[in-house]
Image 1 (cartoon, rainbow, N blue to C red):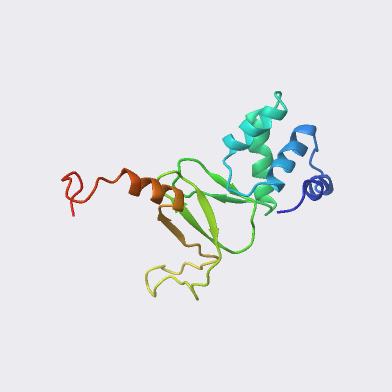
Image 2: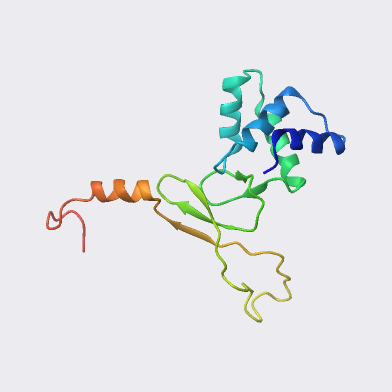
Length: 154
């Protein structure tokens, strides 16, 4: 992810308006270590700038995605996530808490099987692993009754 100053300059070069609201969004994204939703960016921005509008957040995120500075991700967690990491990578998604983590792994040449794609040309492929993050796995194991209690089938 570019720095807030780099994103500001990028917007200016493209003739897009740079406002204090957008500069705050750039700052929040440049320090993001997760895959925020528009709502989470909005909530954080409102704590520092109560006049921030959700529309401004969505427009700025969509502009950045169009420029290739963010990846829009639909990972089945309920809301589109915005990934500031534009490197080629995959994702781990916790099915309990919704946490998303980057995964760098080489799966070789992923391709559509012959005949299945009917001429479809693949431009990119992403692998998404779903399961439990470390925290949720620990929590789930603590919630599990002792063996023989009869509440969990084997």
